[in-house]
Amino acid sequence: MSTKPTMAVECTDITKDFGRGDTRVRALRGINMQIPFGQMTLLVGPSGCGKTTLISIVAGLLNPTSGSVRVLGEPLEKLRGSRLVQFRSQNIGFVFQQYNLLPALNAMENVAIPLLINGVSRSKALNEARMVLKQVGLGDRFHSFPSQLSGGQQQRVAIARALIHRPRILVCDEPTAALDAKSGHNVMQLLSDVAVESDRAVIIVTHDPRVYEFGKLIIHMNDGEIAEVESGQPITTPANQ
Amino acid sequence: MRHRGFPTTICCECEGTEGVEWAARLYKGQVTARADDGRFRAVILFGLDDDSLVGAPPKMLVGKLEDLRQPDAVIVDKAGYEYIWPGEEYKIGRTFELNDSRARLVGICEASPPFTTLPIMYSRFSTVRGFVPGQRNLMNYVLAKPKADYDAETVCQSISNETGLMAMTKDQFFWKTIRYFLETTGIPVNFGITITLGFIVGAAITGQTFYLFTLENLKQFGALKAMGVTNVRILGMILLQAMVIGALGYGVGIGLTALFFESTKHITHLAGLYLSPYAAVGVGIAVMLIISTSALIASLKVLFLEPAVVFRG
Image (cartoon, rainbow over all chains, first blue to last red; front, top):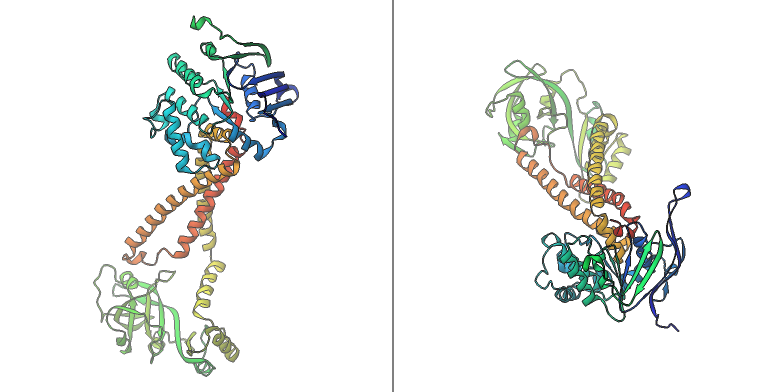
């Protein structure tokens, strides 16, 4: 009998090495981390500290060198091949720094992709995509191609695409890095408004201190290790004082 | 059935074979024509059976086939006429020399252009004796028709058994001719080099195009893989794109080729070139082979791509 997991993500003694022999680099050094449901967790730190590697492991895109990862109660090391791909397609939503929208598809078609991957019919997926696009404030841009949208609008489309199949984990990699301050703030506000739900964990990788105010749990990383975990009060940084 | 000059009695032996409705003698050889301007030209000369004129050209452009029964009468094909009398209007009744003997042009016909592009002339078997006097046994082919309820191949076998000579159906003779050119001339090497170069250049260009396409879209492919698209599906997407591009390219290419042949079919010296269905299908298969191979090679990068690449800046 399976029990409902209390934590969305649980990492135990995660290490990750790249390269071999003399060129081997240890990117993660024994990470222990728990990410709860129902709030926005920020993974922050300077460039090269291992944030992206850690988030790739949590999302099932990379295998750790050692240690174990449980996502939604499932040990990822036991999921391989098509089972892992299926798990990802059903449970994890992605928002990328560079949006990674398909340039040949319009906003509606881009948003519908995760549903199409999961076998939903095209017409149903497009209907759903319209609804989610309205939710992110792009009700009038259904047929716009990525090249016809601003950076902020493209990121909204990417958020809609990440949420359309109602994943229980939303992974966002530097979602504001390519945006100006105002657009970045709007995108974070949107994520805070539409993505955070009681049965979903939102994990945001960032080194942008302007978005710290949105994090309910902030995990600071440095040199492949967790340096500090802050929770409760949002942090006020010099940038938004 | 062909032999270098065998007696006409062979024709009678063929006609006496079971399943043969009729048999007619035929001469085919090369002679030298000398036109009014004094220039010599090699010519392919057919000597048709005097009574039946079997083997005559099916379409006359000027004159009548029956005029072949006149003394020294010769019919020439359109391309041959334009080669021997360039720039002149079609005129029958003109005389010229074939192997130093007088010949009179009584008609101009349409004939399948020969591979060697030599003019083709038709005359009666008995008239040909005057053009090729040094040869005692002129007949080098016998044309035979099987009876209605007999199979051509079986009749050929019977003729071979009866006469000890090679007998072939129309199709067998067609392929024997093709094989002759393939096996005893440099044509396969020349054409083969051209086709191989076409393959290599085509594969290189399409391969490079697909590879660049893959590189340019690596992040998008990575994103799709991260979102849960399987390698099989990505391979299917790339192959589908390749096939659509290939089909479009093939359609445009074969369309332009067909247009070229359609527009040149009335030009005499190009009339022998045409687009056969075999060539069209063969090219189509080759295009799809090149495209799919190139797409498969280009897609290897995507298949082995780590989806985590989408998180790298």
